[in-house]
Length: 187
Length: 187
Picture 1 (cartoon, rainbow over the protein chains, first blue to last red):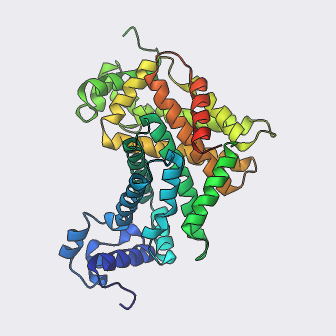
Picture 2 (cartoon, rainbow over the protein chains, first blue to last red; picture 1 turned 60 degrees about the vertical axis):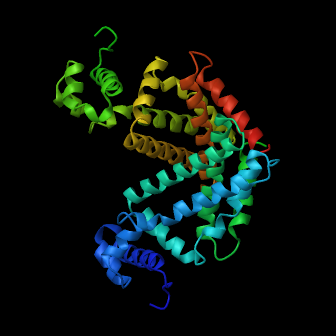
Picture 3 (cartoon, one colour; picture 1 turned 120 degrees about the horizontal axis):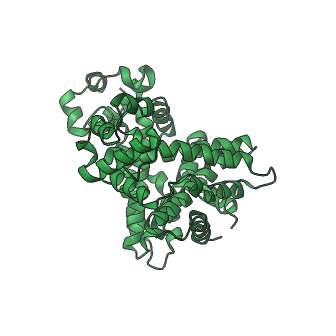
């Protein structure tokens, strides 16, 4: 149990990832996850609504973090600057250990239902960013287009981050993807 | 039955839209849709796998159309030019009657499960466009970023198309959204 963090939530997440990755998502029960984490099923359900949500705790964390960053951007910042600066800090809420993110991605990619859930979380993130931009006075349609365009950058940066060794960091990958996107659209 | 097209598939789609819009998606059965279309349940299931798919027949049509357009673009066309030129022709496969698309959107927006399905179809479209770009020799990562960026334009144009009266046409809205996006990312 040396690599487990002392907190129950983190232990459950680590145990679920290990088990899902080794045996396949459908083959693992909440009982097994709790057991493997040295905790009870009751504790599991205090932290996660179901068997799936243990994989998506980070999504809400990421969304709250990015929305806060957009909200806190200087009033003078243009929408694109505010949202890309926020994305550049996403690495702050990723697990320190890039390998556990890769493990999570393997589990999700192997299961259509989880892939769908991931898409829905990403769409929710886009909507939350658009709302944050609107609160900064950006018109609704522009906010939406800006957020959706930023999500394309985020996805590209995240894929590269998973594939890369410990460097480059997420901020660098966001800058690169954003520059590539600008070149693509002919800017 | 005057406004129904003579084909069974189209009649079922029209009947489903009317009933879902009037009574709510969860309240309507396949039996009712078939009845309202003057057809049998058996005929319904020859055309659609379930109650939901009657709303998404257009998604596959659109995807096939756009992929074909990207594939047929002149070899010299840059990825962005190929994909935006394809999007500009999407109006060719939309229903002639813009009001039925609005009706469909109302039904989908009112139901979280349908909204999720719509997102998944859109993600599938992005993937199909990326694959088509790859077959033109575009590297995988660039193809993905290009397709995701194009989907942001498509979503913006489609929202505006639904809101607009019979003009401007879809091609104009794609051009406008694409110009706005270029301005947003600072090109």
